[in-house]
Every structure is written in C-alpha cells, then in structure tokens.
Image (cartoon, rainbow, N blue to C red; front, side):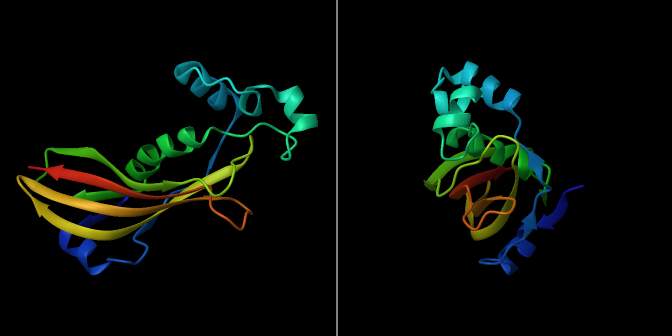
Length: 152
C-alpha cells in the first residue's frame, strides 16, 4: 500500500526521504524480456554461461535502462500524491547515474526524496531524488533526478 501525501506534506519533506519501496527480485526472464524489447543483447545481460566465466559478477547483470524503467513501477507502488489531479506525467530526468550493477537474482528497492515542488500551469511539478539500492551492496545501482508533473 503506497504512502499517501499531499503537495504541502511533500514540501515539508524537501531533502528528506519520503518513501521507500518494497524489495523486488530481478530475474533473468525480466532481463531477457527487456533485451528483446530494446534489442540490447550484449552478452553481459543475456549469456548466462559466458557470464559465469567472464563476468566479474559471475552472473548476468540487468541493463541500466531496465533499472531506470522500474523506477516508475516502484514509485507507483510506493507513493501517492493526494489532490485534485487527473493525471501524473513522467516529465523527464535531469541527471541519471548507474554507479553499481544489478546482478541477476539480486533484490532492489527505490528510495524517493522530494528535491523541489513547484507550481506549473495546470498543476505541480515534483523533482524527486531517486536512489535504487541493491540489497547488500554499498553503492546504489541508480541515482537520478526525476521530474513528475501532476495535472488537474
């Protein structure tokens, strides 16, 4: 069940973690499906036998863009912004980094901290600092500034 916050409550939490997703497991079938959709079949992602011998992780790893694409799902499962909004739009990213790999079978979660809340024509824009952790790893798999627009 997602945490439910108003725009005013988000403003009070600028710079603080507001929500944290549940852990999800990244399975090879998800990595393979992403490879099919994107056409990115680099062996480090899809060749399990070669990865066992040649990869420093000794298994395949998720595509960075797969990890990024899961941010929307993890957000929807984690935080709801209450208000008279009819739609929530992914407006883009200011900055994205992939400081760590996500090995197949690893669990990840996302943490969301509002960086700013601004009024825009017809609604609000929230810039989130999103961090995707890999369970047991020191460095996150992803750090991004994500812009969401909420329109009435």
